Length: 557
Image (tube, rainbow, N blue to C red; front, side, top):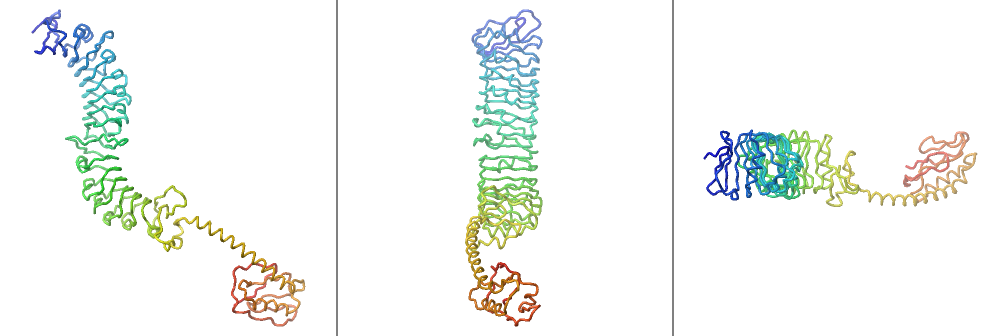
């Protein structure tokens, strides 16, 4: 129905009005209609006509208008009269144009808008200024643009956002916490971007039940872990296939069936981190698909058992972390395939008592093994550590020096007889700490030494008084009888603390000399032959201490 410059088509219910330009006429003409009844207006004009007059002369005359569609204009310019507010407009559709950004001032003139559609345009980025003032906005559709950058603060201006469609753009990365202000977000579509990585921690901890559509065929690193006990990941979508994925993280995710997830992951997976998940048992076929794995981390995952050959397909492993689980035994088949490349092994915080199957023969490249906080006995650890012929780092712990440990691995004594580490431990090992015992024993030794030294001192002083009167002269020993008296005194003594040695002081060169163990002679003058032997029942005592005399030995056989 032609009406001059404009052609208007009104729906049967009178709520939708199609407004089409016609350049053949010079005057705008439309049929008479109830303007207050129109809620949806679709504007289709040549891109040279513009939108300023349209908003001022047409939209402003429709008091209950809620939806404006200015799509398919192929226009690179979109403007709204700055002095006119369209308070009742809630939906603006401007797809399939040539726009390079969201028009400035749009949310000032349409303060109650809740949905915008700028798909099929030429946006390259979304900045904070583009969304400022969009307090009521709940849905943004910008698919099929050239967006390669999202300002980390941009979506902080749209706290009521629920749906965001960014599909078919050129995003390669998304900054962490970019949606931290969007507690109400329900759907994020990222299909057909160039994302290399995605982290579910970009969302607000307060957001729940978020449905995410990912560009599965480009992602190499995916993190579906939880943040502050909130898990945003609920499952993959139909059609998801992560063929080129290298790293997969699911820390803290309580997903009930990881086998279903693993079906979506490609065989190229190299790093698998499943810490704080719930497994109980690692089945023999759980990881058989991932033969390229070099890192497996399943710490604090409630694992109590590992089926035979569970890791038999992971012959390229460099790091394996099974710490802080409930393992009581390491099955002999666990390392039966000889992990030739394994360098680091974490088994700390389990309930292990023996790890005999972990040997240098099976793990020729092992450099570090962390096995603290298990249930090893000290004697077992000593013997186990010794068997490693090469230098290897055992798990160390920053703890009190009094913690009983071997090479930094804490242990316990099964019984008193087992406390023999120091006799079995090589010099390079660290024996269990015995500091408290050493302090006590040292103190007792000091006291005992003082007592013994005091006794010896008075004994020696008494001996000097007995013998000294006979020999302490510059002329040497005066009579043979006096020397014999001294020797007889030693022989006849019942005190085992008597000395083996007698030191004679100030004996001139012509005095007595020791010529043999048993015979004493005098070089300058004849003397009676001294006794050749001493009492054989006399026991040597090693607490001897020199007297203040020149040395002369009396040997006690």
